[in-house]
Each structure stands twice: as C-alpha cells, then as structure tokens.
Image 1: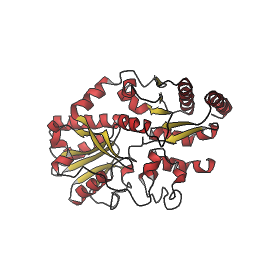
Image 2: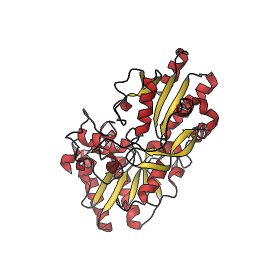
Image 3: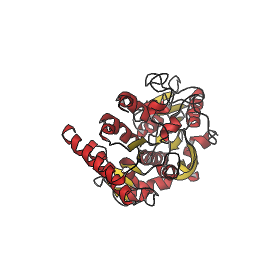
Image 4: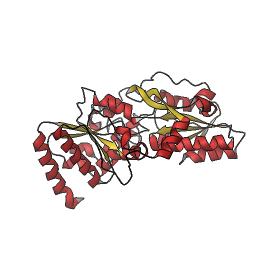
Length: 351
C-alpha cells in the first residue's frame, strides 16, 4: 500500500481537477467503512473529495423495536439465539447482554441445531443482515420446514439496501455524487440489483487498491455526468447475481416497509417471512409488535452519521460518553459501524 500511496494521491487529485468543486461519495457497506478506516484511505483524498459513511452496517440499522422484542421473548422463557455483536445494541430500555435465556451463535444453523436437540424448548433466531445473511436465513427456514422443527422460529430484521439508496440519492442535505456499492450484497443480487440508480455507482471489493480504483471510477463517471453502475468486483459479482440464492430468498421472504434505526420507516426497505411460512415467524407466533419507530437513546446522532450528514467525530458524544467500551449508539457497537471504525483507527484525528 505504501508504494502505491503516491500514485493514488496523484491520480485522484488529477481526476478532481477535471471536475472542480466538491464531490461527495458514500460507501454503503460496513466492511468498506472498516477497510477505509483501517487502510487510512481518507488521508489520500485530495481537497474537495469527501468520503461519507452510509447505512451499510446491518447491526447499526437494526430496529430498536427488534431489540425490544428479542428482550421480551427472552424474559418470557424463550431461548433467543443471537450473534455476539447484537448483545450490546441498545433497545428502548436496555440491551440483550444481561438477559438469561440467550444462546450466542456464530451461524444461523447453530440455532436450528439447538432447537432440534432440545425439542421441549422454544427457540427463536434473532436475525439481521443484508442479502448474503438473508440467503443463509432462507436456507435455515428451508431446513426447519423439511425437518419439522416446530419449536424453531425466526425474529427477522433483514434489510434491503436498494430502497434506502434511492432515498439517499434524492436527499438534498447530503448532496451525494455517487456510491461505492457493497460487493457482498452484489454477489447475491448481481449488477441488476443496482440498475437504474439515479447516481453513479461502482460495485467494489475490499482491498485498498480496489476501493481506491472504485473511487477513481466514480470520479470518472461524475466528470462525465453518467449515472452508470460499474462492476469493479467481477471475480465475485455477475450481472444476474446468484440465481439459486435469489430463488431461495424469494420462496421464503417478501419485501416490506420497515424501520431502519436512525433513519425511520423505509418503504420496501425490509424483508418479512411469507405468510405461508408464518409458523416460523416469531413476530406472528408470539404476537409481537413490529410497527412504528422507537426513539434512539438521547443525544445519539447515529441517524445523522448513517445518512452522511455527520462524520462520526462530529457527534457530540463521540469518544466522550460514547466509546466501544461504553457505546451509546449502535454505530459504536459493531466493528463495522462507522463510529467504531473511526474510533479504532483514530480517523477523527486526521480529519
């Protein structure tokens, strides 16, 4: 990376000189936010080029009510299977980390395996994520259906990235010029998942070189005033996506409007389990409340960070009341959250 830093600094500067003014680009994947901070890529950006973090960390945008429902299930004696990074995500009155009826897992299959091994216990998988994790969730539902695991269900808070991109593209406050698009999501949806965006986009991998090249390609599109989507991750992303995964997702899930933490209700921005498989839908099985938005913790500006209105360091709680050891907002909890990445790699000191 050091040997190419001068090259990329000069290349991006030259590209900006042909455009003039300010260019606002947004990375909309938590893995990109982490990589950009880890590799110190913002230090290579020329004057006028701003790289904003978007709402691509699934843990960060998990709904407050989703956490509240998981806590309620646990307190009613139901075994709730969760990934470790959900434990400290705040609900309206606390987190999951002090609840007793929890099973910390590393894969969705572990929750189903536990349910099969303990048929007398009710087991709920608390599931969040975008398309790759959604596909894994669909596969677990498929296995649960085939195996007749009646004591297993899923509390789903899966997100659809495309609708929120359309909202952000038309947000006059952010004034975005383009998106660095998530390679992991695109490996499932394909290039077609981002067709028709009103802003240019580049599907990117996760190495420093690939991200910098994606930024350069976005500057080229911006300079030409083109709104194309370029696939800069062809080794993992095809035009049509993973057909098998898409068919499996379509069998078990359908789009629905729902809550994105800090953003609000996004039209078509979530997934729900189809009605024909409602026996595996914990929100139906246990009559849980899924509508409306619960307010985030007082003083938390995660919503503004997720929309690109603020850099993490511009939140008044950042590195003061809010740290990875004592997080106030979800963006500081997950390792892929913009605030956690900024804090870990001390990016605010370079801004």
